[in-house]
Image (cartoon, rainbow, N blue to C red; front, side):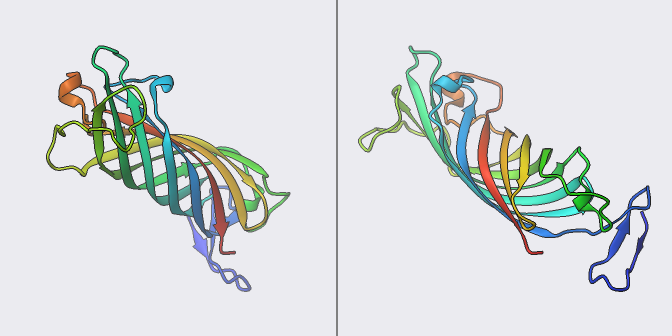
Amino acid sequence: MGAAQSGPERRRRYYNSQARPYHRGPVRLTAGLGAGFYNGDLTSSLGNNFPGISGSLGVLYQLWPHLLIGSELSAFQIGAKDDLPERNLAFRARNGSGEVFFRYEPFHDEAEYADPRGPGAIVKPYLKAGVGLLLYNPKSYYGTTRPETYTTFLQPERNDYPAMAIVAPVGLGVTVRLTRTLNATAEAAYYFTTTDHLDDVSARANSAANDGYARAELKLEYAFW
């Protein structure tokens, strides 16, 4: 892919395979708020989840039309009760994560080019995939409701909490352009993990499968230009 300097332009121009010029960037700051959900040994049912708050801060950068790279730091809580009443298990986990990802926007947007031939897209759906690190700190207990201040937590199955795991997020979303520099986004992503201790009930549940979780957030994206 070739590149050249355009005299009056302050930003460098790049060219796609159809010789359309575009600029890389801008850098966008993102902030999101939503909920976290659990999927693992105890349950895969949304009805048995105790969704917790999820928040994130990140950056986005457009590499070329249709493709962006991003990084994000998140803090979130998840919890759930057991599908099996006889086990009577439940847990709560307060976690943090950092990730890098690619975001692919499949539909055409003239605003991504340096020589737009029409109006820019107002609504743009996208797909995302990436990799990251998770710091998780679960507490398990007997019960069928969210923990209270008087809840007695069980002895942890591991003695190294908070522990770390690798995560691989895959998700989708839709972005709505509010102004030239401000977007609103709705996003949902599922996170595959390398741990079966996200709920601290691996041995008690006797499962060989790793746990996972999901996050759904509403976000604002602000561009510097």
